[in-house]
Length: 204
Image (cartoon, rainbow, N blue to C red; front, side, top):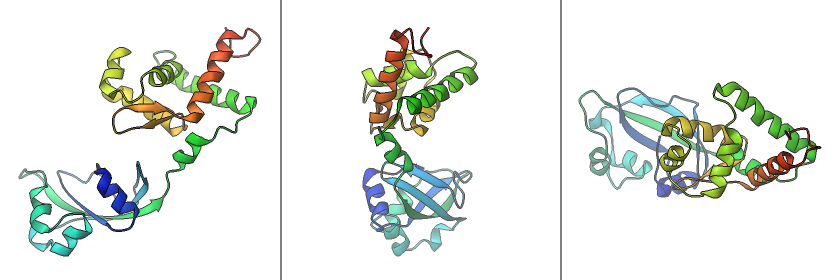
């Protein structure tokens, strides 16, 4: 589910607690945790509703001026149904704290690097994690499609790879593109040092 920044801010403040979407099939289910730029949103009840049952109060709880605006903003299509989605702000995204955590020992860094090595090994196409970290570090706030093209990757697969790095607190998403996190910078510096230090176990 996509939200505007204003809606996210209002959801985090508790001013909104509903969303409406016209879908062919539900894109979320009860209990889903949606990680957003302002924190985690927890999905409550997801139900199909008739347009006639939507009230102005419902619309305001979803961030619209009234039901007419809400309905006008929905995707058209006879094969779609209107879903009413309950939402609750569940707190900060744990990855936010992880991104800022640079209190890492050499052993911690080696463990993170080993985890990246396992991602590389499972990919079936060889090492990619360090390449993507370096690419993002050199090109903050560049569109994902443009970054993907630079490394010969399809955009959606490239974004899936970046999400794996994001889960480890190494990158973060911006309005456009990405940037490397403080933790990611530390890991990248460690990788660079390892590559130039013959005595380091990762070198060679």
